[in-house]
Length: 129
Image (cartoon, rainbow, N blue to C red; front, side, top):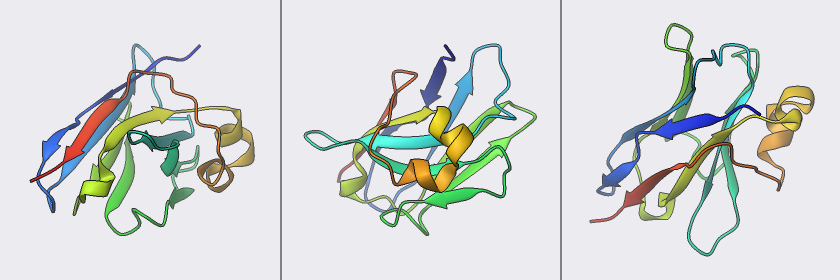
């Protein structure tokens, strides 16, 4: 099973920015559909953003639209999630993943689903003054 490694989280003040990274050990993510989801304490997992096998297939949750940007770096075999204008309600553990829904049903379907399975340990984002 593909294992993914998330990094880049941290403590940031409201209005600040972070860039999260998603990579696979020894494997390129260039042709994988990748999604980011998050889980805040006491809350259900929430799809945040995804990028399909075709980089033109990109979607965002309404709660992050205009503030977060997903991208793929083919040279570094990684997928990034740029988090700007962070708010306290963005505090959560962020995970990247790939699964059959992303791969065969598409990014939008995955984003609005309810089943998000982690493939790594996640990276914690805390937004606080």
